[in-house]
Length: 226
Image (cartoon, rainbow, N blue to C red; front, side):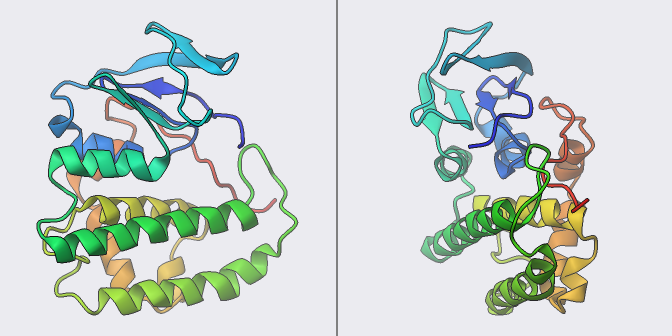
């Protein structure tokens, strides 16, 4: 587990080490969790969180965690699924729910791939072949996502368009696009590119990316090879 970049909290309190999808999801869907989220600052130390709230120990000893309604929720997928559940964006029916869960799992896979191959603000050099990652592995993975997308009508993977899985996937694609702008077009996955662009254009998403939400400015976690 790499150390946290900087820790911010919300009411409900969301504590994150990197600009992961929970930030986007909570900012877009947060009113269903709490109508007036207010940013608050925290520090991490001695195995627990301390600040202007009572110390809470992350269930698995790591960030991110979400504190809300007396709950302390750990693990990225669990946090996003909780947000989806309480905001009614887990999918309007069983088919959408299944699609959303597939996309959330794919987002996790992409994040793990990036952790293996792409330098971060904390680990600026990785031993794996970064050029091969972008030339071979990423296009192959995006083609799988494209094949899934073309089975559905419209620009999104669901009729709802902003299920928690779609938001999670977008946030991972965005982090990748910061490293390699236009990588979806280069991979020939124009459907996924259109999905990315249409989600990116949402006012709530832009508010987050511009640092204008209650969460504040987001630093870049994954960085180009030096």
